[in-house]
Length: 310
Ligand SMILES: Nc1nc2c(c(=O)[nH]1)N[C@H]1C(S)=C(S)[C@@H](COP(=O)(O)O)O[C@H]1N2
Ligand SMILES: [Mo]
Image (cartoon, rainbow, N blue to C red; front, side, top):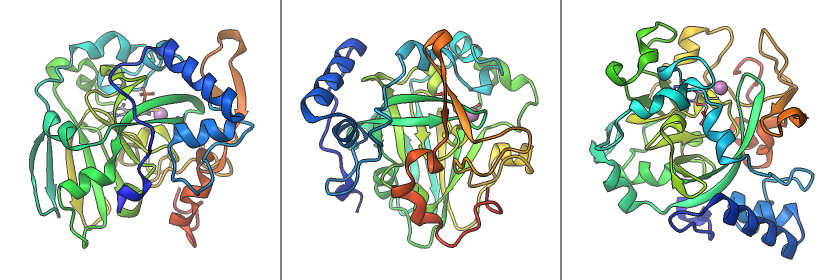
């Protein structure tokens, strides 16, 4: 099922940032702008509309920006804490415990997973609930492929995720900012959606620790906190799993957390966002419904009141 949506574009091992950007510029120049940049890089199905509007050429942020301005509260709440402290996290060996409503539960090593998955390159918008954003060139695979590998059962309705909790390597978890470990969840149709990926790299390099090494979720139409980092547990279940920010502030953070410029956070507007980068020239841009992926995902929420299910 997931195979129908497979991207044709593949990234070989390591692509230096400059080469990568040049190639994108060449592609855009040859083929006439955003449409092709979008079709090739966002990697959506042929025959469907690219996810990128031509007014938004999705110029990726630099590796420096993506790896120096982070949220990873296990290492502290400052934006530069993850870059400073996440190197303390041991990411090898790494196993992901897959359990619950699956035919093949078990401890999957990172190497097992990588050997079975097809790594693709996807350039996605990334929108934090705090109203900043970036554009990130991820490498990774579709979550649906991993769930199929584990034999997810048709009666399962949700997927729960859990981050590593290792206090001796994570200075931030000594503070009760959240109820550790960090946990997140998706409804099954969200988890199986072809845009939903497990990222294992950025710019063709291994995922940096501060971005959630060795593998993290990326759900581009939802606020960034749904994209849980450094995953060690995946559970298929028939009930909606608890999620960290919802447990902490239920009035402010719902289970769905779809990017929606019309539903404000109780303490700030979600109508626009500050695009990180450009220093003094950092710009404020309008926030797009479902973060610009409305054509692909709005159908998942047909008939749902998005204010009630925020
Ligand atoms: N385990 C864990 N995952 C997490 C977070 C966190 O604090 N801990 N922060 C979330 C938030 S709020 C955002 S915006 C993104 C940030 O991802 P980035 O640093 O790769 O941009 O990670 C999300 N995943
Ligand atoms: Mo965030």
